[in-house]
Structures are given as structure tokens and as C-alpha cells.
Length: 171
Image (cartoon, rainbow, N blue to C red):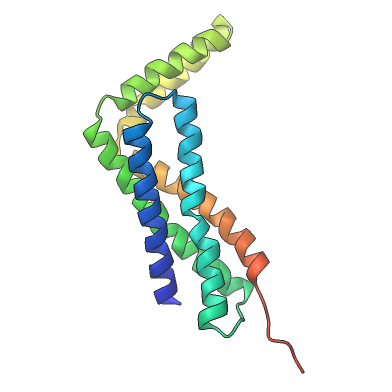
């Protein structure tokens, strides 16, 4: 099991690293909402190794059998490796692009200004300003990004465990 987790966790980590880098280099001029969709799609593609890792373990290492609990554990551990990698990538990105947070906040403020009434805008602006320092903290950024990927990975792990669980047939 450990070899499978490490192998497919590294596949997920490498995939998310490549997709993150491509999105950063090639998608820098795209609108933030498009970048967000690309980011979530990259997470899901990278986390597809959860399903593949559980299936590999069941079919190649465990004689076609895997319990729900074991499948979930494999999926969660693969997700954890991918999530931690994404958290580190985010911290590196913020080091290399220190203006990102300020640019994103400016964009968010302009979007809110056009979408909300003046009273709602002022309320949301105060909320955003109170969170600004927190989002500038590298540890918080790491935890938020890693947790986002991990939660998606956990959901994929649950679905994969349900789909791939199997028990030996009694003859």
C-alpha cells in the first residue's frame, strides 16, 4: 500500500506542479474567473490519480480485493501528497509574484462595485479589508490552498472507494 500511495501521490504532485506552472506562464493574462476555473480543473485532473491509485492497489497488489476503508485510506493519503504540493506551490508563487494579493483584491473590489448595491458593497468591502492581512500570511495561504485540494481529494477518495471496493466471492 505504501508504494502505491507514494507512487500515485507523486504522480498527482507532478501533475499539479506542471498544470500550475503552465497556468501561471500561459494564463497570466486571463481573467481571474477563467484562471479560477483552470485552477479547479487542474486540481481535479491531478486528483484523478486517487482513483487510479486505488484501482492499481486493488487489481495489481491485492488480488482484486480492497475494502472501503482501505480504499479510502489510500485515496486520502494520495490526496494529502497532492494537497501539500499545491500549498507549497502557492507559497512559492506568492514569493515570486508578491503583487498578486493586492491585484486580486483590486479586481475583487471592482467586481463587487459593479455587482452590489452601495450598502452591500460597503459591507462586503469592510469584510474584505478585515481579511486582507490574513490572506497575505504565507502560512494561512499554504493551509487554505492545501485544504482546498485536500477537501476535493477527500470527496474523490470517497467516491472512488465506493466505486472500487470489492470483496472476495465465497464459493
